[in-house]
Structures are given as structure tokens and as C-alpha cells.
Figure 1 (cartoon, rainbow, N blue to C red):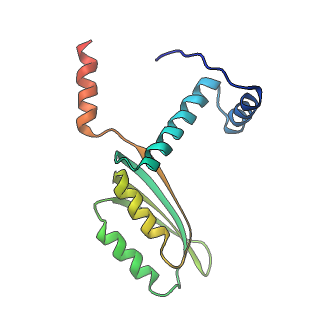
Figure 2 (cartoon, rainbow, N blue to C red):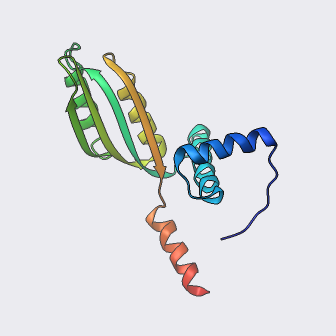
Length: 148
């Protein structure tokens, strides 16, 4: 781990301290590490780079919308290699929520999520992506670590 020194203006420091308190961090370093990772993940997603990831796709939809259930199932069957598991929850007489765990190349996961969220009858959707190391890169890191 490396120690760095940064300079922040007073307003930004106030905002940072407020967020640290709201999120319950024990210290500034822990918070800044998490906020940095989140910002870097967002930048990778926007740039279109395709690193491996795991993800949670959460969406709420009208179960009575015309052919929506069939279209959703067809989407999942067409992308069975990405989907790990789905939790289905009945919210009320009209709405259901699904939470799906996904795993694969970031661009493929994002494309699939966009397709689901844009279906007519889906009222809300959000994708949370978490980058993962590929097995090839992980073995290189382990190998280099043992050389020290």
C-alpha cells in the first residue's frame, strides 16, 4: 500500500466528510479508496473497455404488459452464458421485481442489461457492475507476487 498526499479545497473536503459520515466509513482513507474504485469503474464503463465483471441487474416491471414475460425469458435464454441466477419478487397486483446476478465481459453484460431495461413494460432498471480479474491476469499477479 502506498501513502499519498492530496490537496482539496474546503468545500470539497466538507462534502467528502459529509459523505464519509453518511456512509459510515471509519476513516477518510477507506472512503477515498472506495470512492476512487467507483469512479474508476464508471470511467471504464463509459470508455467501452471490456474487462470481466460480475453484476447485479435490478428491474421492476408490469407483469401484465403484453408479452413482456415471454420477451424477458427469450432475452435470458439468448444470453444464458451471462446469467447466473435470478430472484423474482411479486411487489403488488401489477408489479414484479427481478434481481439477476450476471458474469461476463463488461460490454456484453452492459448490452444485455440495456436490452432488458429498455423493454416496454419495464418501469425501472439499474445495473451495478463490479470488475473482476480474469483467471489469466490473476495467475500472473500471483506468480509475480511469489517471485519477490
